[in-house]
Length: 65
Image (cartoon, rainbow, N blue to C red; front, side, top):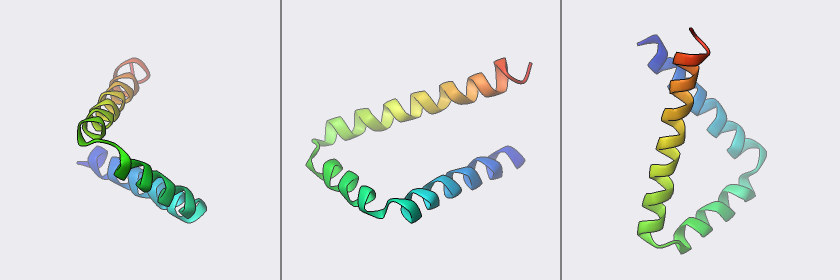
């Protein structure tokens, strides 16, 4: 449970920093996402999930042991 709360907290900190430091960049990224076809957005999301799982695997397995 502690790991889940830590992960959610880190996501909120990073997202908050992005919105606080570069709000115009966020608007540009949202416009670019709107222009993308739905399949491409889905593939980008799946790629992000894959990279996130890989980071977690490395952090929990390789770095912890």
